[in-house]
Image 1 (cartoon, helix red, strand yellow):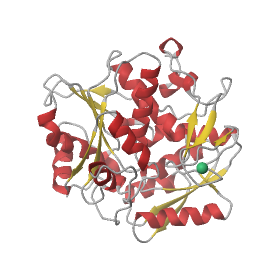
Image 2 (cartoon, rainbow, N blue to C red):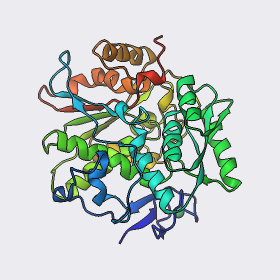
Image 3 (tube, protein in one colour):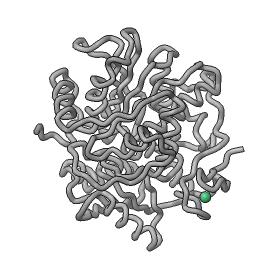
Length: 369
Ligand SMILES: [Zn+2]
């Protein structure tokens, strides 16, 4: 039976309710009882990630609203090891990995007849929610820090959303969104709405298919709220539960040294992620001081025998330049995992298969420092 379950108090709710958090204790919700993954039920003729629609918690007869998201290329580059694969998530419709989860969020809202919502974002999730909301005929209100890159803000307003820029560090934008939610708007936060993580699981399914049914040894991702990280973990867990793979990839969470709550908590052996002071980093897409699902991120790191690595600003800049000089233009946040790989090198065996999802398009933050 499909249910929403609170990861703090354990209370369960019918999936008919469109909820963003536990109504009892305010904890984050997760889906339980998702349809088992079954390779025979993949529908290759469906566009993009909708090839996996039978594994989504959506009605089977439902005709999805889509911008054609998913099935992004997995490539290697001549200048790098052939065992290093880049997943080009920046080719998703709004130029970032967020579209995977947001596509499912907006379909869920449509089924629940929610026509207007608010979200807060450093830019990419806001652009994605604004685009999908526009496509679905919904009114989006998006709160971003006023320091967010002009390109991301331009995306949001071009999609017709109500762009609210909030002075101060990133958490101020969250507070502004919550004030609007208290006024009655649905808080369609990509960090909170649980179906977002199900959408992000499709990145794992695709990597597995694109590697010919193999598990990579390592996957390195940027971690802000950790939705892609948790999606990858959940997706490979479902593949393992279905007997398609025997082990999980080692998942490496990468953060900017200036804002690295997950790295600190992981290496302190903590069970929860404590908030760190806001900091300014060139990796604006992951400047989250305390992720909503911190406890789950730490569990996934440990269960996958992974690691958490902080990288310095100059390392991020150098990795971004290295990618650009090999034909891939990504935003700074997206280059952090390549910088982290250099720090992991003595632990990676020569034949290990490594995947780095390149999460955001360079056009979203084009200046090269
Ligand atoms: Zn609860």
